[in-house]
Length: 260
Image (cartoon, rainbow, N blue to C red; front, side):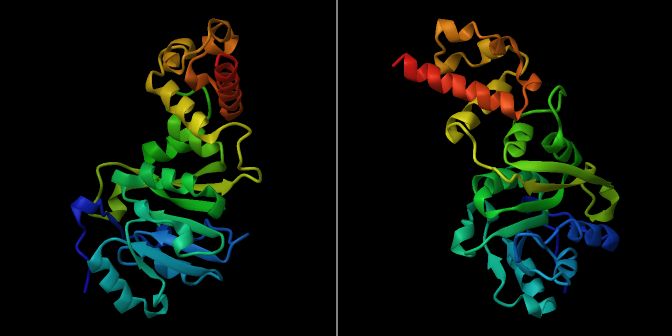
């Protein structure tokens, strides 16, 4: 039995054993004893995770893949979650810290990352394969044209590393783009000294009009005339690091309070 890759699920099955092993080796196993693999497919990565000292769980939305995994990986019994990760609440299945790993479907990879960020208090480590362009964006530093929302919101809570490139020809079927593997380690202090929701809103709004200065792109926040004179509003969003975005959020929050 083999699993037919399904286009509507964005499935591209990795068939290079060395790459699968290298991805499994990215996890440190420090600070957790359980790992959740997203979208294992036919288990090319799973087999190497099962060799590790931590306990591996998988979440798979494709019924055909679930049957394949049950047949070929009996040691996974009771650790296969038949669900959509994007709708998953980790505490429904885990009462402890859990690392997350996978060869992620490119059509939902950014959503997967946002889901991890939303549940970051339970995820100390994260590793996996993305479309190369997205992987680079996640790890990019300020000042680059590719630096954006994903960069800031990820780096606010995780230290990011771009590990290696993966050719599109090691998949069945080959995707149209190259891939990249990244690794994230949660920061020791992953709570923000500002309102989380406002921080997210400021970052997203700023980059929606990234060519404009912050004074223009953040007009919807109802900034006071005095705040708009602050020199930080002369900048464009790609010039600001995480700490500057935190400062910006604090300024906007204080301004809102003072004008109420």
